[in-house]
Length: 67
Image (spheres, one colour):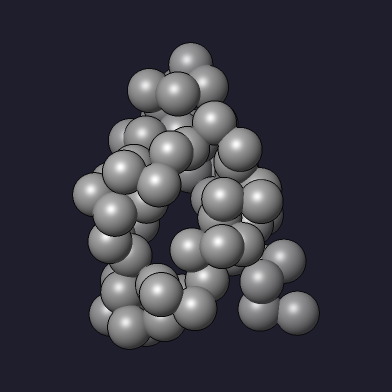
């Protein structure tokens, strides 16, 4: 999902992100505002993931919400 699609659908799918990553706060989700790089950064910050691990987790989540 490219950044424009993610940003456009963010209001609809941020609940899915909250379910997937319970450590993300509502404020985090507002700051992310549908931007992949911000989401990956917050995953690194909240979960201590490396950038590669956070990106892999994002890709897995992205595929799960497409199905």
